[in-house]
Length: 440
Image 1 (cartoon, one colour):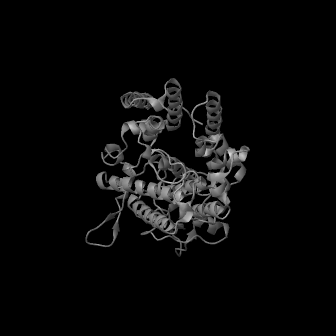
Image 2: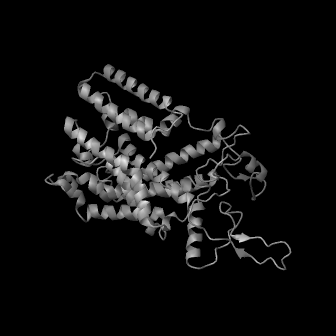
Image 3: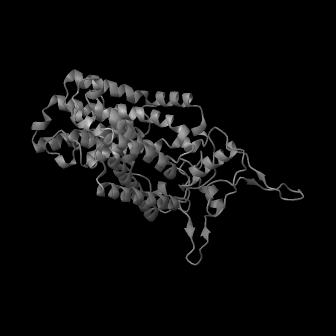
């Protein structure tokens, strides 16, 4: 997606770029419309990492979390401010109907994680996906019943609020996309789709003074059993509750179950597509609108991204199977068989097992992600320094637009410029593939 974004942000300025792929003015769908939402959805997915590493993260004090998120997002916010200043100072061509006169996508990306942190107290009691839907529906009600849609389409830009009406009002819709991405991340990045939910249930039971529920080993093998075995020589094997989850990162010796994850993602994909069809059938919101980030746009982005990820996961399971990445079913029995624990311990990479550690990779056997199931090396290099390369692509696009009249460029010249630009971006990514350029 990053590589495609690098190409599109420059190519769209040339007449050779098909107009049906460019962003729609108010209503409609296009490749660049889905690209914007996919960035927000992906941001939500990676935001699930702190929640999975520390099950008590949601219940921690808000102020330290907001401070941490602000520190991490401050470079993006500063870049958004610098982009506004540079665009206004150089009279760079822009479409104010995208985000407004002063607002831009960097500001949206920088503010979303902080808004998500403010919702952590609600996430303790409400599923993240349901919370995302509630935010999206509330946003749509404000657009329709609150007349915000008419305000976006017709209100003159007479003050700072009306001048940036698209960016301000669409924040709620993008927050809903971010939350749905966060929900997907708790399924995708965890050892199994039920891991995050059950960890939160254990924390809630402990907070209420209840005894944690014993988990069935056949269906819930992603979470260690809370019942400890009886000590040798004891008169009776009286079960004792295991210690409740405590704040701080935890190392969980588990294995990923991508087959379960694929099943869960398939359910969500069907749900989002059915919901989108129902919304279009009753014409809620007048259609898909990236400009307003309305309910149809939120559901459309969730449906597309969930389907894409499901497709990648199914292909990975089909062509790069690993004994540690899925459950194995015997063709003659309904019992679920798992890999030998000795194989599991022998092939687990060093470091934190389970969450985000690639516990399904097999280094010694030559199978799995590292033997051919991983991403192409160029894409890995781009992802390693994605933010820096994205900023470099924006700077390069601006310099090219200032040095030539892109809208009047012949197709052959446009293709040559785009090819050289793309080659340069890939070259920088490849040259920096072994180091992280920017850490914050």
